[in-house]
Amino acid sequence: MRKTLAVVFGLVLAATRVQAEGVALVIDNDADADLSQAVTALETVGFHVVSGSALDAEEMRAQLAGAQDQILRAEAGHVVVILAGTYVHFAGGGWLLAADAEAPALGLADGQGLRLDVVFEIAASAGEKALVWLGKGDAEMAEPGTGLVAGLPAEFALPEGLGVMRGTPEIVLAGLDEILQPGTAPETVLRRVAGLEAAGTLDLRRAFLPEGFAPLARADRRAFEAAVEADTEAAFLDYLAAYPNGLNAQAARAELERIRTAPDRIEAALFLTRDERRAIQRDLSVLGYDTRGIDGIFGPGTRGAIGGWQRDTEREVTSFLDRNQIFALARDAAERTAEIEAEERARREAAERADRDFWAVTGAAGDEPGLRSYLQRYPDGIFADLARERLERIAQETRDADRARDLAAWRRASQIDSPSAYMAYLREWPEGEFADLARARLDEAQPPLQPVPPEPSPDPSLEEQARATEAALGLNHATRLLIERRLARLGFDPGPVDGVFDAQTRVAIVQAQQLFDLRPTGYVNQDLLTMLVSSLFREFFN
Image (cartoon, rainbow, N blue to C red):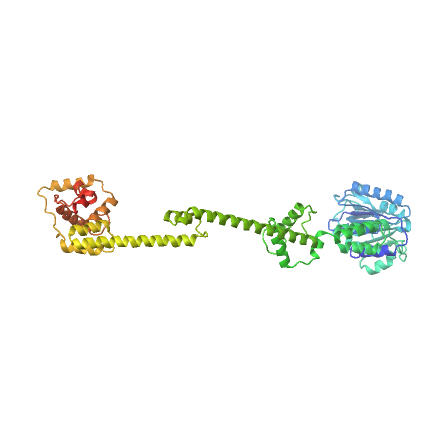
């Protein structure tokens, strides 16, 4: 209801004594209405409510009987009846139809509805403290059975002192909201709520609920239950403002203390900055707790890390921090940082000792194998630069020695100045500093053989035989490349060195065969291959 809760707190503050509880019957058979607000409003001001919705005829009568029992127990208590749904009537009375009613005739109306005159009589047992509200929806039964008329009658035959208010369910709810305010008379409600109609002999000037009407215990309990459901500081403060000495005041103060000392509120009151939160996350990470990032945001990862630290340090696990815990966490992290630094320092010292010990047994001697062994294990070690420097010096010494030997060999060859001397130099130093000069001297001493094309074989079968002989050797690509390189080294032009024996290669083969006194066929046989690649070939030039 719009005003009900505010009214309740005001009523309680003004109450001087506990009044007898009222009784209310609420039956909601209107599919378009919702009378739950009426139930709440009635219970709030102390009524015992019997209610139901979408009831059949038997269920409605059972609800009425239950309400009658409560009315008799309440003695002089107030009575409120609220009905909403579809009505039918005849000259002698009317019915609120059941939710499953199907256009009853007059003779069957009692079986499909609740008699209004019975409701009126039961309500009137409370005298002038009873008020019946009839909510009539827009939808009416189109064609009631024989003897019945749809809707409510224009007038009612009501017991003495009973009042009836009627209108749409919405108007009924608005009127009920007004009438439940102690000290409010029906005539005031009729003036404030447009469309509400009154009937009966009720004194319209007498307040339905007297000033100070407020069953304190029930209102106290409901207010406290509302505060418990909200579970906020403001809700409990509102309750205590209305009930400073109420039945639940002590419990409300305990709940306030609980809320004010809740770990999340304590942490929130610290107003931690983003940098302070990052520092806390770093401290947790140092201690081995995974915060899932150091971003200054306390999400599930950080909350879990805080809870883990609290559990491991035998604190209450709340996953929230207070000021003392933040200091303790920082202290633990500082101690762990010092331990980590000491461990790292010890590790570095041990690694350095191992480095020096290995150098002593490998690189310190200065030989190439020892230096390379040291660098293989310690490429960034203490003596790595020194080891590389010494290896470079050894390599330079080797290059200088090789150059001196190369120069000495060349001097010997140039002093002898013969093809065999130059060939001997080239065998020892094929890539030497003077290799090109040696080959030039050989060319000057022995002009290259002129290409002699192979003479046509008087017997074509001999060429076929030579080709078959070469094929039988099964020369692979690597061997063919080697043959072409040897031919080129001898001064013959085999064409591109690509492992393919083309016409130019065949000419070079003929020239080599002539050089070695072999039959010039232009095809490789075992004799030529032996002369080209074996030691016999090298000895031939000695």
